[in-house]
Image (cartoon, rainbow, N blue to C red; front, side, top):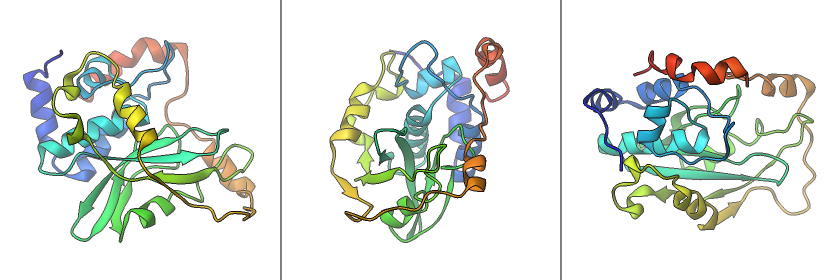
Length: 216
């Protein structure tokens, strides 16, 4: 089991608003899983200096728990030809927003202006497309409260595959009515969707730790 350093604890305690937390998550280089699939704990994300959507979501949920918010995850399920996504829903007053880590220009942070979880999910629908314009978002899950996993997962050295498995098992709700033919995204929308924040480069892999020093 890993332990957070005093410096890491100090930083996480300062991330006391969704805006600060999203900025922090954005600054972490994207984990392209060049050495194989991972589901890193918050402590490992801080040590290794990279995260993909699930790993960043688990970290963000943990940070929310430090500031009195529920550590929630929300799974967005797609057609088999696209990558699924995980966001961290949070509530401010009566409205929902979301923390989101992605390597693309879409599927990002949502301000807390949505009346319920479905409204929040549907804000991702039209921009959730493949490079050929297919709209792929099909289902969303119930929220998963990470308190159900007890304590210790935040500093676990092993991959947190149990959380990943549970996200796939819990109840999901359909989005697209049966038989509905969806129009493809326009060409300009596809171009925007192809923009990435953290390109896959050999040089990038070698400098992840160095870049992350600027974050923590």
